[in-house]
Length: 183
Ligand SMILES: [Zn+2]
Ligand SMILES: [Zn+2]
Ligand SMILES: [Zn+2]
Image (cartoon, rainbow, N blue to C red; front, side, top):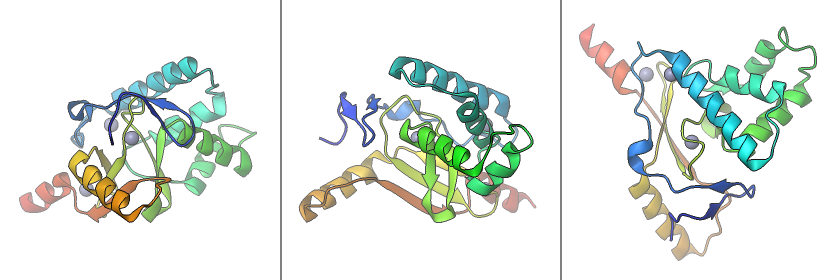
């Protein structure tokens, strides 16, 4: 069964079933992004407390910076942003913070860009269908349940054991397409 209520991810972190309706649509370019960031940090605080892990200041700072917008962030850009804020932000420290955030499902790695995005549904079990806009660089995370189920069946037939499952698609998002149509 692909989606069940009891799910432990690769890192041993407990995840809940995710109803599709809980996923957030690609927010309008004019939305109040502070709300997105605050919600993400609050969820991270709650999850870390529940799991008995520490959202240390450096981990929290990395999460806040990744949530600077909905674009994917590269590790070295993150390092540049953290340096003036935190003397202890050595590359190894920042990479460890990123590993922690990945393990806890608070961020995702965007392999095709070698970058990271914040997860807006980190309290729920999900696989990632990432829609990457090559124009505005925003990444929309979608549940893609039907796609993922089809892939799971394929993998089962192949007798393949999955370590990580994410599908990345590059193209033009609906906002960029609309603004192109209007100009
Ligand atoms: Zn936002
Ligand atoms: Zn996610
Ligand atoms: Zn776009």
